[in-house]
Amino acid sequence: MSEELFVKFRNIILGEVGRALGGIDPRSVAELTGRIVGARKVFCTGVGRVLLSLEAFTKRLAHLGIDAHFVGEITEPAVTKEDLLIAGSGSGESLVPLSIVRKAKSLGVPVAHIGSNPQSSMAPYTDLMVRIPVRTKLSLDDEINSQQPMTSLFEQSLLILGDIIACIIVEKKGLDLHSLWQYHANLE
Image 1 (cartoon, rainbow, N blue to C red):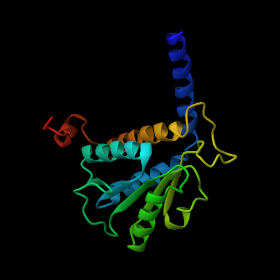
Image 2: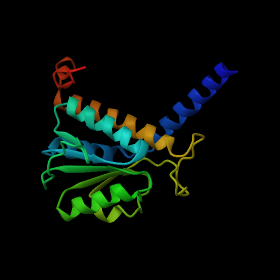
Image 3: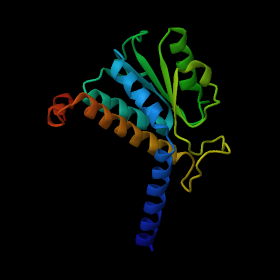
């Protein structure tokens, strides 16, 4: 029985992630990628499981030689107008990322929002939205439904989107994959 359930949910989850990623506008991803490469520093913010997906993305950007930080980390430097803030929030209503987005915008920092709700409270403060059109706690009419608990599909799609963006950066910059190990932690 467990083997059958594994196969069942593997297929469901892979299908859902494929539909979610297929629903993203490639132009918004291209614009975000360009902004990441063009920024002096990149900052990411999110909460909960979104935080975990964005921390992985932030680390991957650092592996590509990009000066990337997660908001709130102990070594976080000051943000400037030459930087980029990426906020992850499916609903766009999460209080902590919303407050950080507002603060960044008051400092003149460009802001990108990766989320599902284009009409969120973050919308007036963002310069770019990359929409992953999946179910959030708001259950909007045009969201892709999921058989997974809560917003798992958003967090999974966000993690894989980050890896897609990393691959785009590697390709566009002509980076040698082997040479990237110089940026990997070596005190492990």
